[in-house]
Length: 194
Image 1: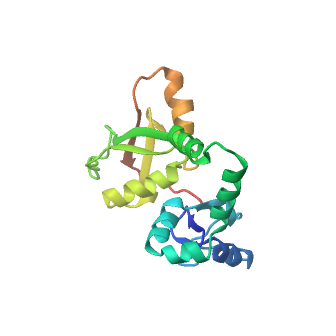
Image 2: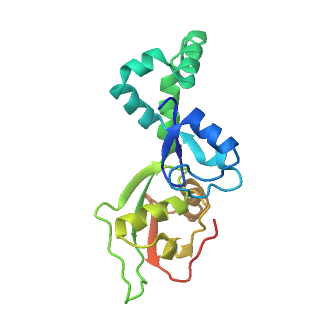
Image 3: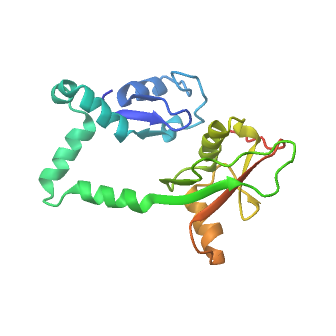
């Protein structure tokens, strides 16, 4: 990849230029799995620093012969400012991280109980959406994400809310101490329109 970018809906990764060219041709779906990316597909692609680092380590010659736009921009920024931009980026990333616990809801359907996760504590970006968390839990629990309901203080969470929003608006105002606690249960009546 050159400047690896990942589609947040399906987690497929592509070269930025290839992906932008594909999306500009009027196709609003993932090139690999054809998942619909919405009316503004460029809003669901993000730079994948981890994948790019991995590719650069495996193919160091490619990194030297064809530097990505991000690398060129980073060099220009470093030359202009004596302070290290990497330290500022790392500090920003750390403050964006949110720790929370996910466990089964205490009022589950007796016919369809869901088990507890082996590792119920998660640490992730605060920008993580409920829809993405439901997909993750569905994979871990071997169930359909459309039937999985996430709750905070017995209130169903809308798919478009971020974990950061939930923590600020639902958890902190009630003076709860400790990590954010989200619960999950099966609910056959749920059907999100994406």
